[in-house]
Length: 212
Picture 1 (cartoon, helix red, strand yellow):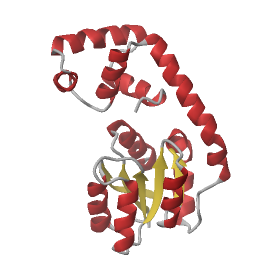
Picture 2: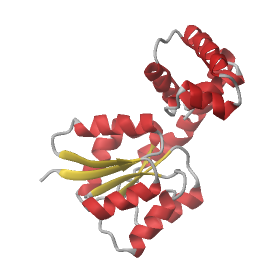
Picture 3: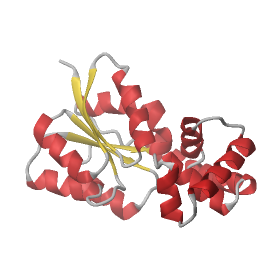
């Protein structure tokens, strides 16, 4: 029997990346991909997956709220929690609520498959390796953001973030109270500065530089 999975992350690019990685494993079955906590809860109730891969920070019901409701409903699905940053209180609460795996987003692509298999086997994945790299990753993230700030203007960075989240030019314009033509002009300049040619490349750039 394949290991059944539900994935939940409010960033479409991150979610799509996780889905691609996990679907490539023959013994994994991705049942649903969710963009918020409520969707994640509904999917867990419906599919009763072996593992829920859950983002800690999501709009509406965040990861901890999802964990509390799962515990209240006595849902048997094991949870692997994704987090971009370490907060002692949140992580302590997550473990108290029964999280079986904890993985930094910066390391997710490399370690997710191993983490899921270990959690499915009944073990904990709270390994010291991820934690020891946490501060290093956070520092690298800060360095990446400084690097971006030296290349792009604050307005251009805002636009990169919104485009990476999947917003269309018209939606970006409304969000920033500027014209669609101005958005197009900014995107043209951004592509030239970063030597990119597509929105997908721009989204990947944003993810790599820690802008999401």
